[in-house]
Image 1 (cartoon, helix red, strand yellow):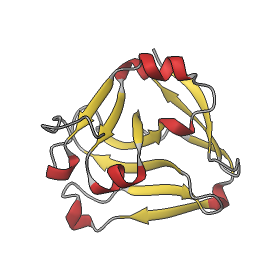
Image 2 (cartoon, helix red, strand yellow; image 1 turned 135 degrees about the vertical axis):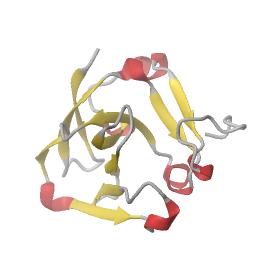
Image 3 (cartoon, helix red, strand yellow; image 1 turned 90 degrees about the horizontal axis):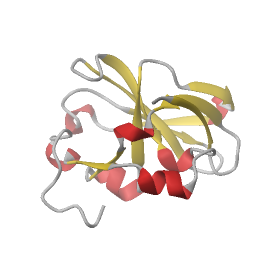
Image 4 (tube, one colour; image 1 turned 30 degrees about the vertical axis):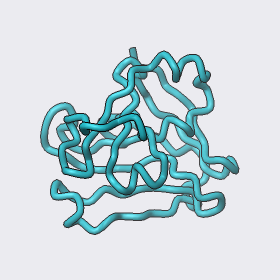
Length: 141
């Protein structure tokens, strides 16, 4: 069931809300971006992530589009503390059907460690552009 969660960066300059169903799982990807940043995400479909504070503090990093054949994904982070809060992308297939956000679950302020521990983990082989499949090795993720 979706619940509107509140989140923020480490220093609190950016605050946001997002409707997330943790029962859909936390996604861990082996692409170089997610692996190097330790990014764990939950998908939010449409434009329902709302920045409530700190819009001017959001920095943007978009990887070379050739590294992600479906298009560019805009990774958004706090320019003060460096925390990646979420990313925004566009995909024309289920379950995305357009714009989506990938919220960094580590930035959610109202989720307990016990809730995160109970959330299913889904693995993505983004390194080989197979986001809907798990890589053969996942323990390091």
